[in-house]
Image 1 (cartoon, each protein chain N blue to C red):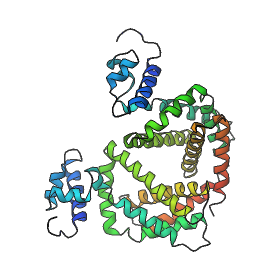
Image 2: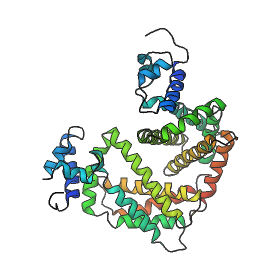
Image 3: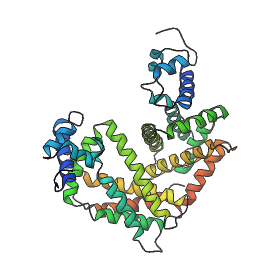
Image 4: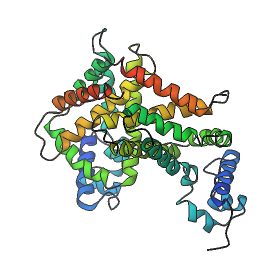
Length: 190
Length: 190
């Protein structure tokens, strides 16, 4: 291993986003990302399995935060309240700096079908992680599956609204609102 | 175009499944699939964009059946009743022959991460199709999004139970049961 590189992961993610925005995802190589970040290709592959993964580095953290948030809700909490705990935990790290990166990332992913496909895979893993964290609290099937699906749907809705260009509201408030909307919607299904 | 080939699509799908089962997905070429089906590579590409797609030929039909089933439910039907109409429409074509193919297909897809990723993309398209068909009936947001997600979840649950080796029940009965379970689960979310 080379010398210690401070914030290598973040520098690579930022360099990749800048290059993808400037030149397009397909026109950017891993070597160019590493160079822009002032690091080596070898360092890139220490953090990411391939070029696609540099756009999905935050997903493991999300899964961990969801799980911690769910585990941290009081013993008597309903499934929806536990999901609310997951969204609160994520809201704590969704700061202004994170928002700027998310806004830059969105059009890059949307422009490439391979990236959209990977995004769906990551979403499925988020649902699975939320499912497992809820099941660990004793929520049984099929309630746990529905709660995890709707929890990730609330997350996705809030995230979408958060990154909109003219949005000024915090992620946490948007998440509470989205979950409340879904709760109300379940009563209208008949 | 060459001479007319009866059931070319079905023959290619069946040949592909047989070869994938015998040799594995990665070890099978499009040329080999065409040869096994007694057709040409050129004919293969008239029906499927690539090797992966030969496993997903039924998805467009599913989307069409979902839409027709939803459109065919009475005007006053609830969103869940409309979803039930979609599942009924699919049940009508999920016969014993289809079950044999589905049982053969399942382990092929499960063994390959690229195929699993494509399956997720197809699932997202099914959800989108159900969403649009429900929206066309006047079901508003976010109810329509929740109904489409739960509808596809019910479909997935029923399908999973249907293809299990020891299952003897019809798809239609399994679908009604799965949708009833999800309806009950929405009342337990708190």
